[in-house]
Image 1 (cartoon, rainbow, N blue to C red):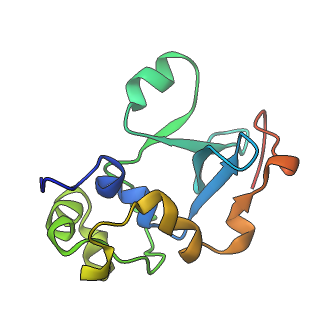
Image 2 (cartoon, helix red, strand yellow):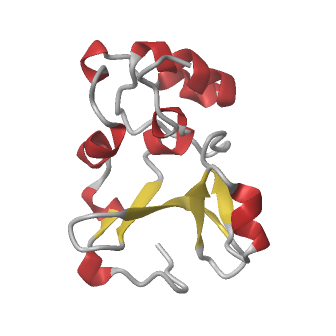
Length: 133
């Protein structure tokens, strides 16, 4: 892993067009969910790097580091040095563009530029319990 690579840079789901962000604090934090991986009730899976811990607490989730077979690139580029690791985690990441302009940028600040605006749920409209997208 490169020195400037963060866990978020290596999270496959953050490069996926199926990602849904739910704002949980006004102008601040977001929860990430997948609009394509749902439980029997139709609730979207939480995206996490700690799937076992989430599920032990009863939270349906997807391993964000590995992604899934429903991965579809949002078009957001990755740092060139991170592409290889993303592809190792999920072959479908081969379509993620590499861009040196991402060096020094925080992925958290770039994600929303590449997502469909309807995949970003503002604080005022959040409904985390039983939310269906």
